[in-house]
Amino acid sequence: MVSAMKIAYLITRMDEFGGAQVHVRDLCLWMKGQSHEPLLLSGWPGKVSDFLEQNGVTYTEIEDLQRQIHPVKDLKAFLQIRRVLKEQKPDILTCHSSKAGILGRLAAWSLGIPVVFTAHGWAFTDGVPKTQRMIYKIIEKFCALFGNHIITVSNFDRELALKNHIAPEDKITAIWNGMPYVPLVSRAHDTSAPLKILMVARVGPQKDHARLLRALKACREQNWTLGFVGGGDDLELRHLAYELGLDEKANFLGERTDIDNLMEKSDLYALITNWEGLPLTIIEAMRAGLPVVATNVGGVGELISPNETGILVEPNSDEALIMALETLLKDRDALEKMGQAGRKRYENHFTFAAMAQRTVAVYERITSLPDTRNRR
Image (cartoon, rainbow, N blue to C red):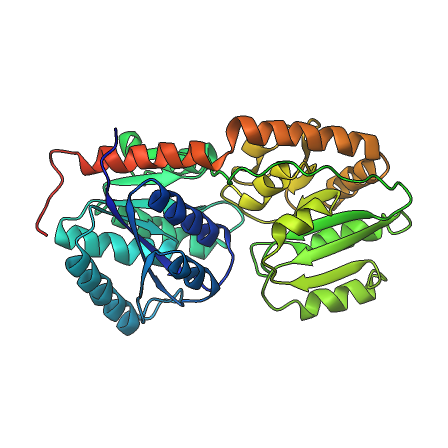
């Protein structure tokens, strides 16, 4: 029986529905439901932190915590984090996102508080610009010296960390992401209606919305519509859709809170991207019974069983993506079978309860280490 713990969660920002934010949100709620005491610390409060506060999770804003490197603000943020940790005296700090992982590990180490860093995808993975990869590799090696443990969300990321000598094997655990269980909603199958394709991803350098649009131009004569969901500046994508003659087929929906509902109304999920950890949106799609076409980067290949639950395409390959889309768009029976297989794979491997139980086991192990400093 795991004893109740006071668990502090530190993340750079909570004003957007990214994978790390959803992960922290759901963990806080689950831990609270298991009689633990979660505390949330972040810069950039917003809709996600507001939701957690409304559900009884204590929230503290770290005013100077931001993504960009800023020596003065970073020092202030370090001191703010340290002050909150010293006042709250959590049993463990868990850090999420790169900047939070850097400052949080240093602050926790200075107080003798056990600290775990969850890497939601490394900033030195393939696809990230070379200079950025080199810088973050050095930073992560340094910060690992001040942390007790690292959780990676995929086996790919664990192996990448070991290959780059970030930390020894016994200090890195791979725990697949998971999503809370919801019943599968049956769909009405109107073969005369357009096949609905959905991609949920913030517009930015990591994602490749433009490649999906260009590939779908080759499938323009088929009966489909596309929905892009996510924040960020999508003006250039809207112009591209117009130039490709897809402006009547492509819909830009912005950031939404009803992802479950959008998934239920879709027929195919797409995630075309340059790098990834283990995308929660693919797990959401599998949970909703959707087949998936996705770029084979990071841990994506650990989610999808090729030609069984979806199709993996190699990075930067327009031809492979076009072939995958043409195959899926013309065979609705195959889509249905893939979606059913994806749902079973979700139930067997990617439920939130399984992920949370493994995560809390790591927390318990770290807090019970005899050599953990305790100067609190």
